[in-house]
Length: 142
Image 1 (cartoon, one colour):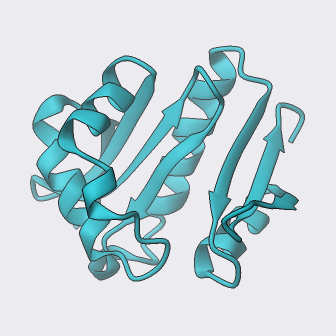
Image 2 (cartoon, helix red, strand yellow; image 1 turned 180 degrees about the vertical axis):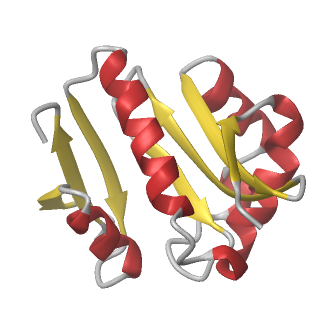
């Protein structure tokens, strides 16, 4: 069944957290990201989107328009390679640009599929962070 892309709402947070816990790479520490943190990210400092299949969240993305940070982009492993990551990426980056954000940034673990995904989408390596992650940036011209 084809996934449906829509803006995330408070009622989606549990499904978003479920997806986040199921990913194999770039796992965020569960105790550091509360439901309240997600709500703040989708309602006040940015916006989130989900892809749902048969009413179940199978992927989500959150972009912060204050900092230009891609806060999250995750797809449930059972729904990878369906194009959902790219759908989420594109709607998120387009929205951030529409808000006047000229330089987007994110961090990801080196050597992951996520790194390859972002490079294929035009993101450019900027530096290695103090935690060993790689910072990538995407300018408005890309």
